[in-house]
Amino acid sequence: MSERLEKGIQAMREQMDARVVSYFSSCVHCGICAEACLFFTETGDPRYTPIHKTEPMRKLWSQEYTFWGKIASKLGLSKPLTEEDFADWEMLVYDGCTMCARCSMVCPLGVDMAYIIRKVKEGLAAAGYSPPDLVAAGERALTIGSPMGVTIKTLEATIRGQEKETGLQIPLDKEGADYLCLFSSGEIAGFPEYIGSLAKIFKAAGVSWTISSQYFEATNTGVQLGDSKLAAQLVERVVAAAEKLKVKAVVSPECGHAYRTIRWDAPNLIGRPLPFEVVQIMELLDQLRREGRLKLDSTIEDRLSFHDPCNITRRGGVLQPPRDLLKLVAPNFVEMTEHGAMNWCCGGGGGVSSNERANELRLQVFAVKKRQLDEINVGTLVTSCSNCRHMLEDGLEDNEMDMELIGITELIAEHLAEESAGQKP
Amino acid sequence: MLAEFIDGPLWYFSLTVFVVGVTWRMIAVFRFGLGSDLSVPRRSAAGAGLMTTLRRFVPRREMAPRIRLHVVAGYLFHLGLFAVLLFAAPHVLFLEQHLLGFGWTPMPYWAFILTSQIAFFGLILLWLHRLMNPVSRLISDADDHVAALLTFVVMLTGCLALMEAFTGLRVLHRFSVELLMIYFPFSRLMHAFTFIPSRAFTGALFGRRGVDA
Picture 1: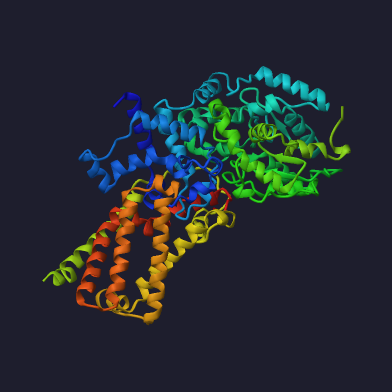
Picture 2 (picture 1 turned 45 degrees about the vertical axis):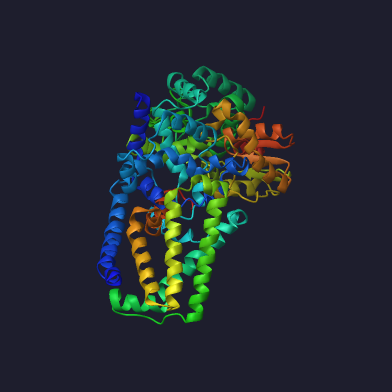
């Protein structure tokens, strides 16, 4: 057995816990999980069955921890895990799974496939079976501070541009502010208006906030890769920046996995509770709405819908805030048939969007989102994840669909009451 | 002689293997442990775990069009099986005399025939699905087929035994049940017990985040 294979197998061994064992002991191979997975429903390829994606770990469990498995291994009757298995499952797990966890919502035995797949990734990553693009993104995150190579100079330039755009000052390194806002590199590079929208809303609502020049990146490539060590290092940077500025809370931006990571995974990755509260931007906006601090003076008349980012809704628990916010600003808001905790993924989560070799497959599985959108015939689609937004843009363009796409923060900012929105350019 | 062995020592052996095996498998699940979750929960994980354990008896509405066969066949088989297991007259009598010391009103003969046919129909449907559906075919292994075959044999011999054609059929039924009981703890049939922690773990994780899983 090669050293890298042994490393991968050992990493998976270390991931074995009571949940995984109860899941493998329970699964009756009914295949219902396949019917919840867009990679199966849109390709018809049974290899994309979610429980099949956990096969390396199930095999390890079976061979090392079960009665028949141990006997079969001793007698040489079972085939041990090979590098070929790792290479095959790298494609299935990194290219054909967005970790959206829709499958985990439907298993009659309660198996949480996404939980196991995350652990399989630990083994694959340890053995060096990860997509090169994602590995490179992880290296950039570690060395530059951003998976896309966005530096503080780029952010400062973006801030200056947004200050000019809004006529508002955007606070950098303001010690003692209530909220520290993080961003995803995708937001800074692709949707800088998010930063300006925050400035407008926070000015109008009287929110004390800041951005850290020490660390501003919300995304965590370590989680996408399945490299907990890298993930923990990136979380520590957020903690250090928040502690330095003595903020009360960290605001996770319009980015799905960033929220799930900093809100739910971060304390477990670093092994201690976070010394600050974490809120997703929609939660904060909804809090301002409830407190009467979010004053709007117009609505969008277009028929629109909301795309739930899996990591914010299904895996994050922020289900109602976007709906309450949209009621405020969009009288013609309609839901897609399957939404909220049962939404269909955009196809680019879990690191798939950073993995160029998966592009064709990603666009193929977008067919489910196209069907959903065709059913409701909307002119505008709102979301709260810059990664979803990029994926939706790609999918709409690929399918020649004419539809406006907008982030929810930007939408709210566009309809702020004039007198409270600060100086307009 | 063979009948006496099956009714006596083999019964006690299979019962012991079943009880000890199932207990050991359940302990084996929990001895792996679970790290404590340090994130701040939105709501009680325990309550959500319990709710998911119950909620997963009913499939999600959104999934209905895609999983009708799984659900219908699954319910027919499991409901039929449990009705026969708990309410067939010989089973009630057996439980009263050998295990519990008390009994209850068994189902009439016609109801037994009906429920056992329902269970058979469900099991055969599930089995055919396993053999013919590309997904089930890919992910199924020998254990799935052995478990299904053993269950089928137990049900078949049980139906034949109830017709009381001759004593040998009753003994054959007892023998097949004992084989099933010995096989049970080492197989995927354990899902009859492990589904509880499995659902509860998932429900707790999603629930503490504020999601009804």
